Image 1 (tube, helix red, strand yellow):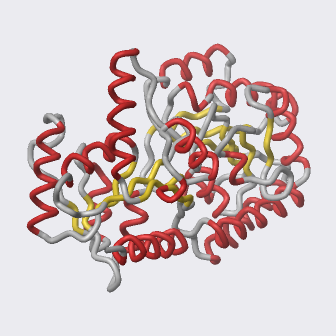
Image 2 (cartoon, helix red, strand yellow; image 1 turned 180 degrees about the vertical axis):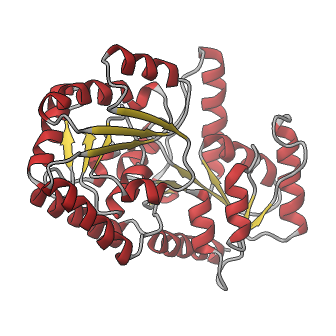
Length: 357
């Protein structure tokens, strides 16, 4: 999301520099190709955080940076420390309903204290949904005048690609093939991929050609592979690992599923909606901020395999309803969650903060 915002903001109005203090990875190349400056300091990855703090402070002063935009709590603490006494303002965007990770009591207390200190020094704290903003107010005591909600945004696929994708999807439904069900995200417990696999084993009894493709990698991969073997789903479920082209992956799908335990603003769900896919998602904070049930997506009770199974079968058997829902989803993302709209909202906020004496 940092990369998306930087690319959408980098213009005659904003000169963006991205400082990935934990390493830029593949995003650094994409940013540079888009004309965005990426600052990767040799030795920063794995080094003490004081090193990144010193580097950021020096760069901000030498380059006369007007404002620093940090993302998540660790970056907030780094920015607050680096900019202390410089007069350079900073803001923090919080992307998850879980503001702080679960840790041992002493470490958790220290992280909480540092985060409260950093967010208290920030010119503005931004929640990506109203639910995240409420958590900021309740847990970190962020006051009203320092709190704002700005939705994340994504790049919208061209209409021509959506038309082609929808045409092939409709043909698959008409031929009683599929459906092609997809999920996208790190293979971790909170994403509840096991639940999707269990649902697919039941869907197969009614729709023998159904297939589930899961894109992403993570520590749960072996557990998921064992579950697939146990349920004899080797020809029905594919673990793709990390993928390079999310758009191509989604363009070949019929139904998108996300069963997360919690979310901030779920970017993968927005991406699926932007491709005109009907989405079936768990009824948890973050998800329900995005989807209106049975209008532009389907909300199913958390951890309810039967409900997920039934919803997949229903959409597969009612392609016109699936198409209507997917169209409504795409229209919502274009209206409320585009990268252009996100960049415009942040530009307004940057301008407002810099106008203050």
